[in-house]
Each structure stands twice: as C-alpha cells, then as structure tokens.
Image 1 (cartoon, rainbow, N blue to C red):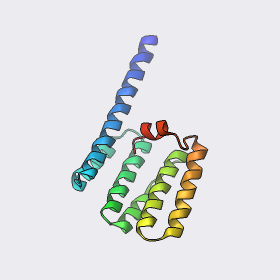
Image 2: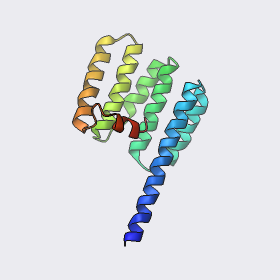
Image 3: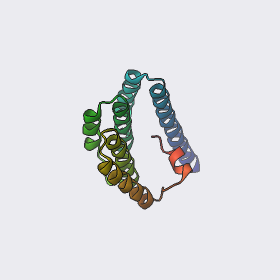
Length: 139
C-alpha cells in the first residue's frame, strides 16, 4: 500500500513539475516576443490538460499575451469567459489580469476596483503576499 501511494505521489509531482516548466517556457517565449509560438504552446497544453484549473490558467496566459499585444477587447473577452469554479485564488488571478487590462484601457477606476478585489481574494484564499505561493503557482 505504501509503495502504491509513493508511486501515485511521484506521478503527481512529475505532472506538477511538467506544468510548471510549460508555464516557464510560455513566459520565456513571451519575453522574447514570440507570441504566436507561446499561444501555440498554450493551445496544445490546454488540450492535454487534465483539469479545468490548469486550463483556466492557460486561458489567463492567453489574455496576458493579448494585452501585451494591445488586443484589449479580445483579451477582455477571454478573461470574461474563464470559469474559476469558485477557486478564490484563481478568481484573484483573473481579476489581477482584468486590472492590468483596464490599466491599459486607461480605465483607472475599473483597474483599481479589480485589483482591490484581487487583493481581497488573495487574502481570502490564504495566499496573500507570500512569495512561496506566487512562485509555486504557474502563472
């Protein structure tokens, strides 16, 4: 029984590390302005993703790329379609990106509102202001 548990935990650890490396690769492509390659990797990875939370994180990455490219209306559409499924941390990530979007649209009122709500949700999720949580979360 212990052996089976260790094997299952090993697979879960490998999957988490694999997902983290995909997000790091996406970030690297974006920083080098290889947006199309990053979106291709996101789409491929999202289709292979076993859970909705990871798929939502990939959608957030897509929105971040669109914001960076100045495609603000398209990014807003992507962000509004993401389902957080009641996960407060994921809701906070989405609202952070909405805040970033509204800053780029020069809607400081909406940016402030979304960023404040994001902060509140981060705090509610127990992940407020912790570098460890931010480093562990693949966004």
